[in-house]
Amino acid sequence: METVGAATHPWLERLRLYHRLTRLDRPIGVLLLLWPTLTALWFAARGWPGWQLFAIFVAGTWLMRSAGCAINDVADRRFDAHVKRTAQRVVATGQVSAGEALAVAAALAAAAGLTLIWLNAAARWAALVALPVAAAYPYFKRFFSIPQAMLGIAFSFGIPMAYCAVQGRLPAAALWMLAANFFWVIAYDTEYAMVDRDDDGKLGIHSSALLFGRADVALVAACYAIYLAAMAALAWSAGLGPGFAAGWVVAVGCAVFHIKLIRQRQRDACFRAFLHNQWLGLAIFAGTVAGFA
Image (cartoon, rainbow, N blue to C red):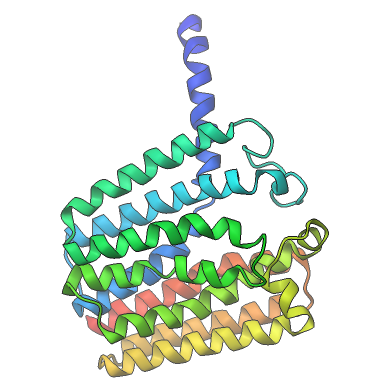
């Protein structure tokens, strides 16, 4: 038995490393992608979209986010080792090679691609547009003053995909929701960037936290306000009532809490605010489900 255990141990260790590479130990990224995607799915279907679409979008979101993490770590491997928060990432430490990480990303992306078989042509085209956007994002921080804008597009692409999958087209509501979600992404990823502000400045990496400077807290608050106001307008136009309003009020409370956390610009508090955004997204989604129910 000891021989068998010793023989399987290297494979188990690889799986543990892949688990860390794809952030399965930290699902916050998946949730920040999933809640707006599911919200769009409910809006597009005006309620429950059916088990098939629900399962496809949950699986596709998880697979593509995991692939994106691996690609991101390859792109940032020379920077991550010098940033306190990312120094122990498995590609930065050499525990997983760049080639191996890309192979994992390719396998996950291929698995996500298989889910497109059950979607219509419009959704497949939207997915094809989303892929290069997601792959390009990690490189924008090298030359673009506000790379969070690119992330805002990448992390909002589940919205047009959801509308296309349900309706076979891209209505104006989908574009408005994408624009609204863009500002939410700017808000929470600026909180994330505030954690690494000092390290990024030394390394010459661009971020919204550096660009906004002392106006960072005010601009994060403004982005939250735009997002929440836009979602309220979309809900009103869709005829949603008290159910959505209840979730929306909880989301407003989350946003206010985040602003209080980041006011002193302390690393741990800013990271806590970023992580707490999963509850803001859940509140909007839960309100949407209640509103259509």
